[in-house]
Length: 253
Image 1: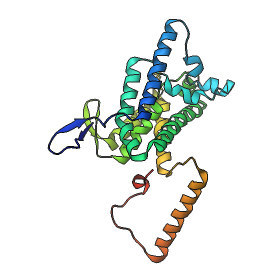
Image 2 (image 1 turned 90 degrees about the horizontal axis):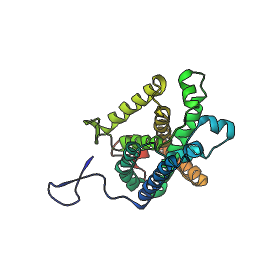
Image 3 (image 1 turned 120 degrees about the vertical axis):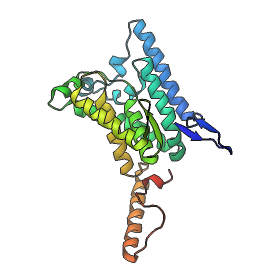
Image 4 (image 1 turned 180 degrees about the vertical axis):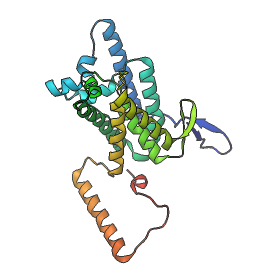
């Protein structure tokens, strides 16, 4: 991902910019648990059985914490490298637009929501769903796919190199979503494709549904104010200028 430099001239810089404190904290937490997990496997002590997401365990033993903790475990060097690189590349600019509080809310809602949908998916009466039910899922990919969708919605024409081919972000999201959907229904590769698809779906609902605030009363007031404005526009034929489209991607958070 290439972006213009802040200085004058034709120089360019690569990447979205430096890491914010919250992104540093997320990456450090993932790396620390990656190292602890690797050392535990050497010593014969695994973290996956307790912190990894198992739909079977969540349903039978109510290990609901796994819906969040699975996001911080990774199975290999390339697994964590890809996820943390994507977190930096896509998360930096989104946090800059949204603010830290909204970014963290989005990140954990999509990650945990992807875990919940994975558990629900595993309860379907099909063979491919039963494979997920008895599997153990780790990785931040659910939240990362959510960030990718948000990036594609905010910057649809930005170029993303998908398998070394330059693709506009909006099409890259469609392609990756289609791959996740097909893989979750047809493949048994061990990859948590249902979780990837869940992250995309939760992120889309989150963004299309408008703001998500930690203050329910503030949300009620916002919805009421928006209803009054729309009613006034309809009554008095008031039209706003500028670009058309939904207001979610122009709202300050």
